Length: 184
Image 1 (cartoon, one colour):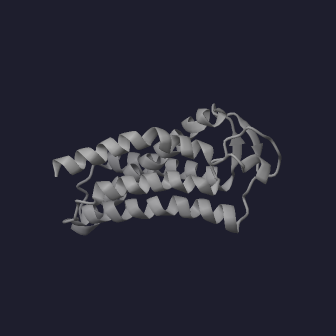
Image 2: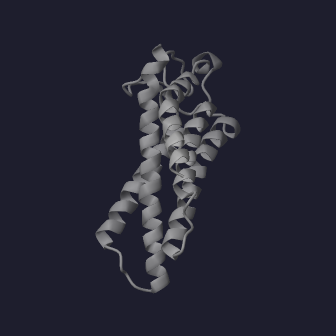
């Protein structure tokens, strides 16, 4: 049951990925619309704020993937890649692409009934997909190509928090799907 307590770390990953997609997607789409119209219709404070916050979320995610550390559920760092420690939360493990897949599925459902009619909508959708695919690709690249791995004894249970997340989320997702099917 120790792995259940690490679900909070997964929620933190999901939060930063959703914020990244919302903020940078909005920034890119508003910027594309302004460039297409050769005017600045968007609020500059909004553009600057979404850009800074979105890049901050992107920076946090990239840093946590490139410089992986084992941490406990409260975020206390137990070890880095080159030192050894046990009972950690290894968010760079390849099983965490299933968390990224949850986010991709969420955006696939969001955009499934959506066909972009303006440049702004098109760039929002394309930038969101680009960032949503970039994060799991970066995670796999760093784990398999760059070798940012922890020893096997530290990562043998790294998949369990992902499993607990899906155990918790599955009944809600099933109810939502039943509701969507019954309403259509």
